[in-house]
Structure formats: structure tokens, C-alpha cells
Length: 187
Length: 187
DNA sequence: GATCTTCTAAACCGATTGGTCTATTAAATA
DNA sequence: TATTTAATAGACCAATCGGTTTAGAAGATC
Image (cartoon, rainbow over all chains, first blue to last red):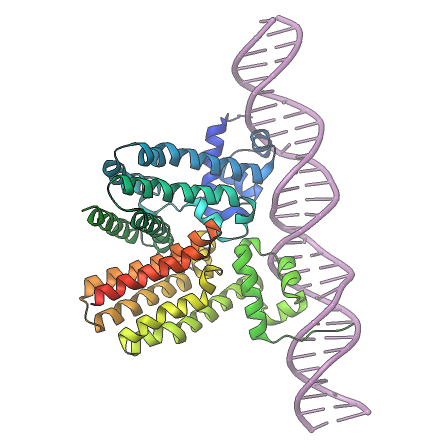
């Protein structure tokens, strides 16, 4: 019988897509094995802690990605360029609205209670990184904070609306508008 | 053995809260019976179609509420007053950010596929009602459409962020800012 | 007060759940 | 080549799943 060999990073990415499509409760072990082609043996080899460990490692992986690709540039790079890049990074990561934010989705049901720290710190860091960049670009603290909140809220809302309407175009449209508002505020 | 008698409207409201907290997949029948105190007999008496019928009737009930309390006023009432009232209605319905939008939450996982029509038309009508009111208040079509999308997206994003951060204040803050933007646009 | 309908309680069903375990395979090390 | 280690496949488990059914209590109608 032929065997397929997976490595853990592959397993994380594959399982992540299943959680993204079905949600934490909706993703059963048989669903996961069926969609990823990973057997239960493999899954429990990589994740002895079961579903909860899978979700925790997936969230940590997502967080790492955002830290290196978006938060660090916002925190350390030239602010205006980093902000401009942020919109492209978001559009690329969320596949122009065809892919939802798993961490946001987890925030909406009782899954939040299991992972409240990871969820909170992801959004906190995003908002703070963006607000920091806006301040370094010349805005006062209160306005920077408000605009940063608004941008993150807008992205999350746009992802939801795109899925609700079954229309990805709305995501790009709103992203563009949010981008314009930030650039207007920066003058 | 003492019996508690429920009526269907009570059942709908009780089950709705369970779906809101646990999501569609997370809400098992035993969860629902435990939290609502309705026995399985009662639940299947009111909803012979099981969980799917419960969710469908709950969404219809929510939709009805929004139609009479928010969409109709926007569509038929004096536009500026209706828009002003909309923010209060949203704040009241979502309990200042402590209660999420069930229809939005359903949109994010595969539950969407079961109820895609109801989900799409809820958001479509909300946006169209608001855009219509903005036009009757004097805005041109394109700007009205854009601002309406932005408002609905903002409310949904704010609900998610409030839960993600465990901080309801952020909901009220963003709602206020969205309201200001609309009033500024209306001059 | 007998009858009928509405509603509740809970035992019960097969299917599925998350999770465990064993056997086996492929590769790495010796 | 012998041994060990890392990884996969899938049978298996008790518990729970969504759903059905039966029995009977509470109200309404007559």
C-alpha cells in the first residue's frame, strides 16, 4: 500500500484550511482526515493534543506570519511605505476576499474562550503596530489609534461581507476605500 | 414531575441565544436542551426539521425584526431621522457589542452554504435600505452605496473586534465614529 | 367529566464523535 | 546489514451526536 509522507508544516497548512472552511466545531477528525489525506495516526503523531493543539499551533503559525510580513514592517520600517505594503499583504493573504480570517472567525463563537489570549493579542498587536506607524508618519496618538482600529475593523468586516454576499469584489472595493482614507489623513 | 410550558416564540429566542454563543455546529442538541431547559420532545415538537429548521426560523425571525425596526424606517421614513435611529437600533440590538450578529457568524463557516440565500438577502437589504436613505437625503448613488457598505462592514467588524478583544467599549467607539462620518457626508 | 389536542419527558436508536492503539513501512544510523 | 527511529494506516473504543418514539401530563372543548 502506497504511503504519502507529510511534514509538520504541510500538516499545519492543510489542517488550517479545513478549520477555515468548517470552523473549529465543524471540523471533525474524519472531515480533517478526508480533506487533508492525513491519517489519524499522522495527525495524532504531529498533534498529540488533538484538535485543540492543532488549532493552537495553526493560530501561532498565522500569528508568526503576520508578525514577520506585516507587524514588524509596520513597527520598524519606514511608516508610509509599510502602511502601503500592508494593504497589499492583506489582499494577498486573504486572497482578495476569498479566504477568511481564521482568528476572527474563532473570536465569534465559544472557540474564543479556548484561545482568548491568542485572539486578543493578534488583534491588539495589529492595531498597535498600525497606530504606531501612523504616529511615526505624523499623526497624533488619538487619531492614529482611531484610524488603526477602523482599518482592522474594516478588513474584518469586509471579509465577512464578501462571504455573506458571495462577492469578492466588495472586499477589494472596501480595502481600496480604507487605504484612501488613511492616505488622506496622512496628507 | 413538574413541567414547564413554553411557547414557540420563547423557544425561538432561547435557541437563538445558544446558536449565538456556540455557533451552528457547536450547538449540539444536548447543549440546546441543557441551556434552554426545553426537552428534546419540545424542541422536535416545535421544530420537526431539527437543527436546520431551528436555524432557519431563527434567521427568519431576526430578519423580520430588522425589517420592521430598521429597514422599513430607512426605506420609508424621513431619511436623516431614520439613519440617526439606525445607530441606536444597532446599539440596542447588539447590546453595545456584547451580542454578536448570528447571521454574520453563520456567513463565516460552511453554515453559509446551508443558508446562503437568507444570509445574502439580509445584508443586501440592509445596505440597499441605508444607501436608499442616503440618496433621498441628497447623496449621489455611488457615494451613498459606498457609505452604506462601509457602515454595515464597520458594524460587523466592530462586533468581531469587541469580542476578540473582550472589550465592548471598542464597539461603541467605532459606532460613534461611523455615525459621525455619515453625518459629515450628509453635511 | 369524557375526549381530544397540545406539549413535555426521557428512553432509545444507529451513526459519528474525538481519541487510542497496534501493526507496519520507510528511512536513518550503526 | 542489523537496528532504531519517525511516520502512516486504519481498526477500535467509549461517549456523544442528531433524531425517533413512546408514554403521559396539562388545557381546551364538548
